[in-house]
Length: 266
Ligand code: SIN
Ligand code: MN
Image (cartoon, rainbow, N blue to C red; front, top):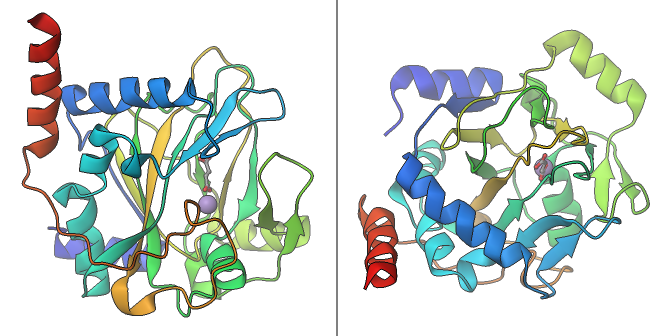
């Protein structure tokens, strides 16, 4: 459960960062499974123009460890608490931000895309993310504009050329104005850090030219009553299974990691 202070901070700033929330053992399995997924040729694995992995969609549906993270109480409960109702998985993705070639994510608001492309009625969905690698100031951390979630849906243009992934992006004038008001923060830290942010919070990330990959897994959880009304994207990008998520127990992911280790030792 989030404390009263944390809930207040989320509402005021539009985000919450909880360092080292998943243990090294939990992160290790999620990370090695992510690396295995990136090696697979499948439509859900989206690549940069260079061919390096950019993101793996819907990994919770074809990978058991990620299936357990998708139902982990540390991911589900805070969002249920903030929305005051059960949630379902709108999108699940593991962003690679590969060493040397990881490309930018232009400035955007997530709810802008969910409203325009998926027909989501209200900004009652949000991303909750776990760092799978150390996120540093130098390897393309996610940058957030504090308090920008209070401005509603800003005008955006559909960019289909800058990166391999189409995105509704904000123009420089808009970003300059909101950054003058709110500044920019880039939460960094060890693997296992947990970051959640409001669907209207403006964010983006620079390219990664360092040898250090920056993998982050994002669950987009939507309040069940706020299910999408006009899906236009592939099912594995914007899910249409609106069943409420029933969380696992606290130890399910660790037990699974240990069972794999035991099998390997036998
Ligand atoms: C996103 O905004 O959806 C992803 C940005 C990132 O992983 O840097
Ligand atoms: Mn985003």
